[in-house]
Image 1 (cartoon, rainbow, N blue to C red):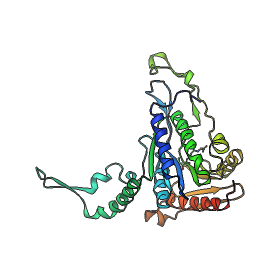
Image 2 (cartoon, helix red, strand yellow):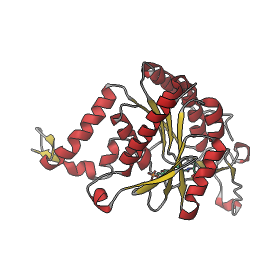
Image 3 (cartoon, rainbow, N blue to C red):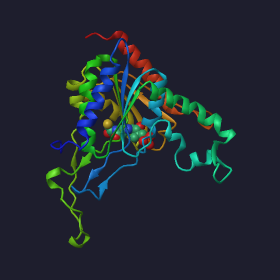
Image 4 (cartoon, rainbow, N blue to C red):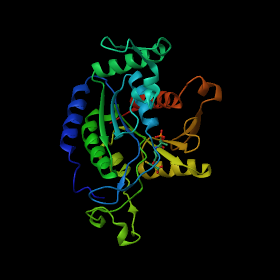
Length: 304
Ligand code: 9Z3
């Protein structure tokens, strides 16, 4: 993995992570590291083109809001320009449509339309509370290599929390990459013919993360599949291999309405009915409540 060169803003992010973790590490405070969004795989050092994936970061951004509600301090490590907690509700034109321009001219004022106040007010209140309490730290990555550097740096800081740290690895991290020494420096030229792109397997960081970096933390990973018949077997395979606590399996097609919680000795499905979805409920709320219950249970039974 091209871990030789850290991203240019790496030291700044490391300082932010360190300060955030130290500031909140008192009494019984819990902390969650959420990874969110996809990662890019650059095809050139001066990157014009890259391989990407579908993830918009909805799962991670929504879950961050619910973890804050459960009194966790949150490190939100996300793909640059993917969805973020709170602002995700006003993506695209939604925000503009909530506003009204009054008295165009020198005395222009802007107000929130009365029927939008009910939507905006609770989200704004939660956003302000999280900001004012300094309870959420936003850190962003773009490429799979940036992601790895930051993940390791975050774990270095989280280790001090022992079992009070929860890792919620929801980012869709690329399984393939082009090694740094095989990347052309400059933009691939079409005149040079069809490029021969040789993708290699990305090493799974879950192995050192679980056994070395945060050995006492509660680690949850996500497993995404498109073939339902392999979802639970693959999730269990991951648990057996990496020895973490929980895999949350989801299908690309149904990830907004159902997931399966897989542990070494059990699996159970969580889902939303059509009616619940029409009422605006989010599966992420249910997922987070259940993860928090499992984490609480783990904390109560934890022995160093
Ligand atoms: C997930 O499975 C997430 O739930 C989604 C969320 C990426 C499906 P959205 O961004 O989607 O809300 O649209 N994340 C993990 C996916 C993944 O790549 N897992 C690896 C694997 O399946 C293991 S770490 O092999």
